[in-house]
Length: 342
Ligand SMILES: [Zn+2]
Image (cartoon, rainbow, N blue to C red; front, side, top):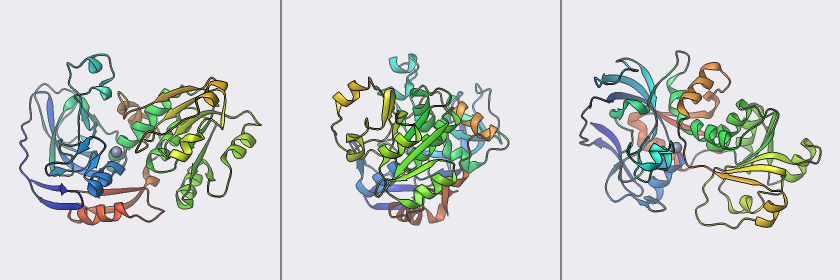
């Protein structure tokens, strides 16, 4: 079948590739419709590796996807041919201890699309376990379906933050993950969400989405948090930038007893101020991807409490995939999510 193949760093081709596809009793086959390009896809394209994950053989990219069911294994009861669906890209070992404890995202044996050596989903069809395939509600489109994947990251972070109604949240970083985290925080009951970045175009979009935008190149976030909270501080900080300088100051705007969730991934170990965290008895949480979140994401999209459409800024066809990646590697500042339609 035709697929977008990363041959090695900086070399992408749209070509035929042989992938063994057999639809087992608990699996479904999906004809791909929309795939979002993620920062990790672009990173593999540019560098051929993320930390310990190195592309050693040609690998199909893509993990944010929606499509239509074309074949259903005989033990799959919740899906039928023609259903529009989205897919969780990580398949854990069902017998792993972390999986059995409900933390299947942390299963060391998880096979995640487009994380070497596992092929991704920028190809004509995929076979996937029915358990990780979710039917899209009537009013949820293929774009939203593909973007459920990043939204799930934001929702997982919001759950970890134990949001209480009326909380004030600060999100550091207004890329896709920062924006979906802010959306999840708003849908989760925060009264106000302050979001920071260094790119004004991203902040302009955040303002349109109802967030309080702070450009840290010319505004002081601690002062703004103090003003919004009458000097108390923010209840929650979501760190979604992965930036060392942002992380070094992450406890400053937090209120006493506040919570922080680390969402962004720095590229190397970075220091944090433990004493400042202690003075506030800050509760520190981290997330890695998500688990059991897709159904909630789809309910929120169906209800209209979350609308991902404003995040889709650029669209390419499958034939233009290589061009799409070249663009995603060097996008306009106003770009958030580039999608490929198959
Ligand atoms: Zn992603």
